[in-house]
Length: 158
Image (cartoon, rainbow, N blue to C red; front, side):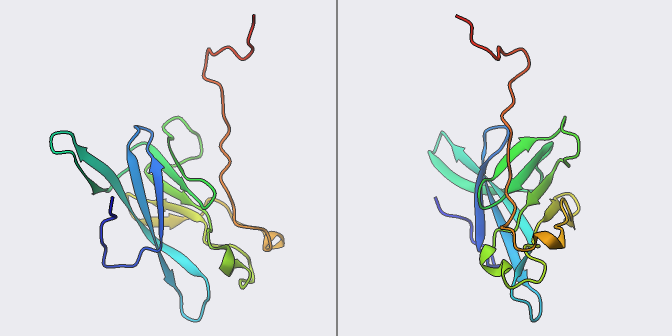
């Protein structure tokens, strides 16, 4: 498989399975502000792997919406889940962490390229504000709890 070519350099890409089971490739675009070392996220593009059983040809098509899903991107783990019934999470959004730990040591306030990107209006927001006392901590990571499904037997009885 070959990633689609774009006119802007996309140094970071993530492969993620959607809640519907589709393979997504997310490109994260970065920019550098004047006289700063750290790169900051400037946007995203999402592609879905489309394959034809008739021709046995696969290719990436760009998608503009995640519907009720939200993406969580990070160096340690990336995932896509339906957030229709999840309080506090915005659908059709990308939550991302600062993956660039090699640059965070130069920043006075530590890792700061963390946020939430709304695909509908291409706006950026915060999902977590780092306390200045935590500036030497490594970049954030996503922790996903494994919860039993309703009605499942939590204990095995013989």
